[in-house]
Image (cartoon, rainbow, N blue to C red):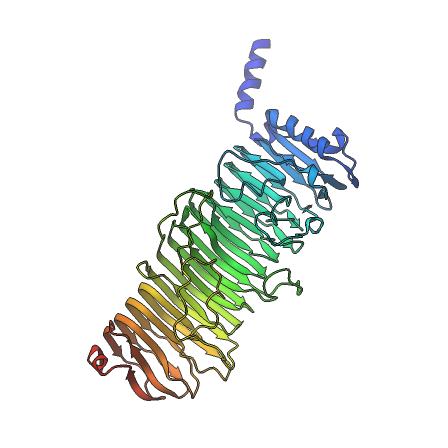
Length: 530
């Protein structure tokens, strides 16, 4: 009978859910935590984590403000911060030991401190309706010199090469650096979190860095620096990532791929996003309404392909859309060979609206010899502030090796879209508006192979040379395009390489001329189909 009972108990354990079988609760107060916000509770929290990791369990912070330096997470542990409780980051740099992973990445030699840290772990969670407060203002930057201006500033959360991660419902505030950094992680889920990060420079909401199989949903973020940030500071690629149902505010960029792009980005879907002005009007860096809305960059080698961004509403950003294929060539360590220019291919933006945008304009830039390929912009409505343009370059400098930012080229030669060094450009269902006083064309294409403009309409000023401007454009098809307002020409064309430009079913009624050309031979390269 005794052996039968033992057998039954063992059999029952095999079919008991893990949560009830092994997830004991380890209350940090049972380990001597004070929770008074004054006394250091690091040792008590760490002891609870260590014990919970033996067979799996939940470490509970409840009913207090728990002051701590670095906490080292362990596998099979949930760190739960209960509603009303706060994990409070220490303001003393000495409470954050340097932790440098043997996985090399661009940042690790000068960003080596974290409040919550884990490397090579599995089955870890941070949950609850409580708050992580990094008290990042205590680590204010005192120098502009790199890399010293990054040192001694801890991340809020940093997980490296971890698998099966859940970050859920937690509130995060006031990091000294990025709020959370996930490097080369796999099977990462972030949902229901709220981030308010306006304590220091580099106050990103989250940085997904070379991760695979990621789901992010139902999040709120308001940050001084970039909000939703994907980057690649090592050779690992961001791959198989979905983001949905988030409300974002940033003084810099709402959605950003970059700046580091060593590995690249593949198979990424972002949808149902609102980008709105920050509740914090004072800026440490950037602009109150944000510099960029959707910013996609490949500048350190790497590949970006299979990216879809849809159903995004923006308000107040200076530049709604910016894509950049550059050749900065940043490497993990100095002295390493500079990578070849990267690849941007198969990118689709659909159902995008922006209001109260700035005067610069949206833009897509490859570089000579390296084109961005297969860009699809569908059902996009952008409303710009417009205004008198005092300084506009006819063709902006290339700036191949410079830090990429949507404002890097100054005011663009088109108020809606300026696109250059690209092939397979598809603009369909585009509406562009701006306030009075802006006589730039709505769309300008420069060095483009294969362009398709269908259903593009927009305002144009009475002093504008043309509604569309093409320079060295080959194999273009323009259909159902309609300017609103009088203009000198529907299309102005230039460049000896221009060829096979076709116009169909467009509204030319507001233009004095259908086409103007810089050189007479170009007329034979343009066909107006009745």
